[in-house]
Structure formats: C-alpha cells, structure tokens
Image 1 (spheres, rainbow, N blue to C red):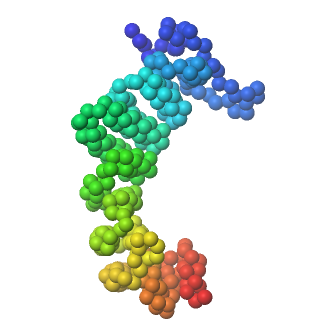
Image 2 (image 1 turned 180 degrees about the vertical axis):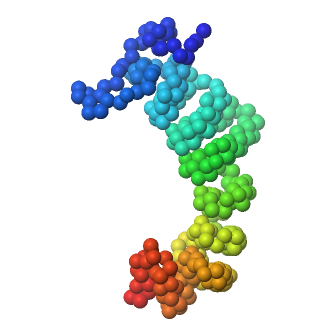
Image 3 (image 1 turned 180 degrees about the horizontal axis):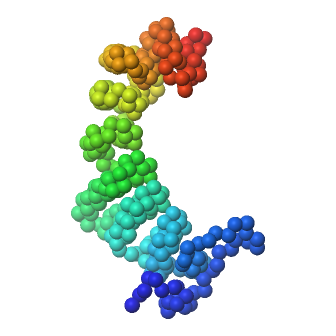
Length: 325
C-alpha cells in the first residue's frame, strides 16, 4: 500500500530515478535550512524535469512539491503539463485546487492554475460536440463564481486581488456580465466601504453597457449619492462619482448635475453643525465650482481644505495655484 510518509529513496517505484541536488554554487553566502523532506522531494522533482517525464508518478510528485511550497510556480506549471499529457479527468483536479484557494487565497499560482483548469474543462466539453455542452459549461462557470464568493467568506477577506481577477476572468470568458450586478450590490449592502466591490461594480457596468448611456450613468451617479447619504465619509462612493463626472471618455461635466452640488452642500452643512469636516464633499464642491467657472468659490474650498486637511496641504495649495495662473 502507498505510504505518503515513506521517503522517495525507499519507494520501489522511484528506484530508477537519481535525485538532483540543489546547486547553490561553491560558496553559498547563506544556506537555507529546509524542513524535513523538502530537499529530497525537490531533488526528485528536478530529476523528473530533466527527464521531461509527464507520468502519473510525476503528477503525484508535483502535489508533494506543492505541499512543501504552494507558491512554487514551476510545480504548478509542470502539473499542468502532466494533466495535459495524461488527459487526466479534471474534476478531481478541481477538488485538489479547492483546498489551496481556501487555505492560500492570496497565492497567485493557485488562481492561475484554477483559471487554466476551468478553461481546459470547457475546451474538452466543447470538443465532445454534445448539444448540452454549452449549458454544462455555463453551469460550471456559475459554480466557479459561487466558489469565489465562498473563498472570500471562508477567509473573511473580500478584498483579495487575485480572487477578484479570477472572478472577472470567468465573467469575461463565459460572458456572464449581465448577471453580476445583484451580486456586487449585495456585497456593498454588507460593507459599503468595500473598495474592491466598488471597483468591480464599475467594471461590471462598463462591460454591461459600452458606450455608456445617459440612463446608466445617471443610475450609477444616483447609486453613489444614495451611498454617500448613508456614509458621508466613505471615500469609495465619492471616487465612484468621479468615474462618471469630470473630463474624459464617457464622463459629463461636474456642473451638469445640480443634485450632486446640492448633496455636497448638504453634507458640508451637517458636518459643520457637528463641528466636523468632510474633505471629500469639499473637494467635490471645488470641482463643481471650477466646472462652473466660479473661481472664487473654488479657491475658498481649497483654502478650507488646506486648513482642515493638513497632510495634503501642499496638494491643495497646488490645486489653488492652478486656478490663479
């Protein structure tokens, strides 16, 4: 019976392989003290690579290498080679990656491997030529979106760049953008300051509607304004306004929406009553005044910002100087 703890040097099926030791040169400056088994496993892995072997035992060896270091890019790459050459059933591989994406959610290699895996499964299903293949592929893609959410929930981490990249890859690859807005709205209901969710919302909107229509732009601006009313010092929502207002592609001038100016005035007034200050509202009000050509009012906002937001004082001075040149 196979014993996973048995050293490779004592395994009958590996008797034909001579491990290749790590070459640190004649006089290494700092010799790394590896944990038990690490050097042996990697010695056999180097030997397998030199032989260009893509056998079942090589596939099993990559799993052992990954156990020692799940960020080993070469091990994941070689594992993909073995899976491809052996035409292995890939459903088991999804289970293999489940553990790593949950336990090491910030490991880029895991998510890249998962991305390749989903694409490969889809390609194999299409190659079968069955009428129901596309339906099965879409079901798998939706499962993968659910898996991404599960990984975020398990780790209580909703701001993992690699996980979000994987999600957007699935949405793009299988054209599921039109189903995504309710998901991101739910995340923002749970945490209105989730900057990753705000960024994702913008990406979803741009993929759902490009070029941007006036109706969609107005909807998104209203969404940001509603969020600001719930939490005025939420920088995410103010930045989201700037994605649709100002200068640039698919934007309209700051001065084109009086309701945004009214909101800024409302927030600044409430903050003043509470002896507080909202720099985001003041900055937005300055942008609106600039767009309207009201330079004195814009300068007044920048002067106020210089006094209240001392860490960015020189930046606000610079903004004010641009208006007077």
